[in-house]
Length: 323
Image (cartoon, rainbow, N blue to C red):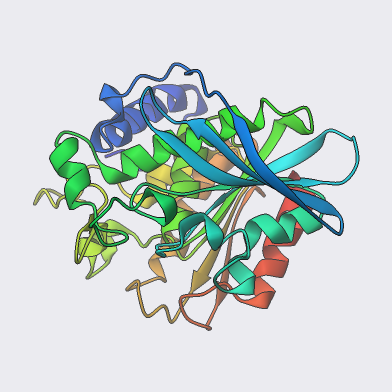
């Protein structure tokens, strides 16, 4: 692990950053995943007009064999616009949550930001929505690991979200240099990893997505019952720090891309969420080194593991400011 809280030499940061990224990629099994683009073969299955925007049901390949569906929201008008990748929570309905079809209105990110003038995309993660295998329960990854024993579920989700950016960049309505990402819960983890490991995601908002692994009583969050095992290789080592990486290092990888954390201090899913501020304080050292001292903030609330109206307003302001 790199002690980023004590890191002071900007000239040495690229080498340290590379070491952190390699560690994270290895744990996600991304070191075995090709990074090159594939033939997406994007198709529009259907579309519905709403006041101010059109919602399209699109399909595309995420790898050589698997074709997935996503909701694409396109505001009215011909202008090239910023876009937002909207990551769903750990919910069975997958992409229908950010689309506003089923779930809280405050996590209907794709619909909400389309109404505010952004192009948005919301796909299903593996094990959710239309990607639940026949005979399997939603969010149960046991069959996934039978098929891909050397992979990680979090790594597969990351690779698939990278394809979202590929898809967005194919549409003339999207400014390819202005792509953000937002997520809550599982979606926040995916939003942070996408921004950390794919430089095309330039602004991030992450709600209730992590606590510091070395400071929580529940590192087992990464292996939930009955089978949502996200990062199989992420286990305590017994050495100082306890884990191969921690979330302050992931935040450091994101620098200098503007990132807003939305943290519930009384989260009933995550323990010791006060450690999110610890992670932010440490990572701010790197943001400052990279000339972006104001680009990382941690907004806290005491309304539990959810996106509140006030938190959503903070997210709105963040995207208006940076994207």
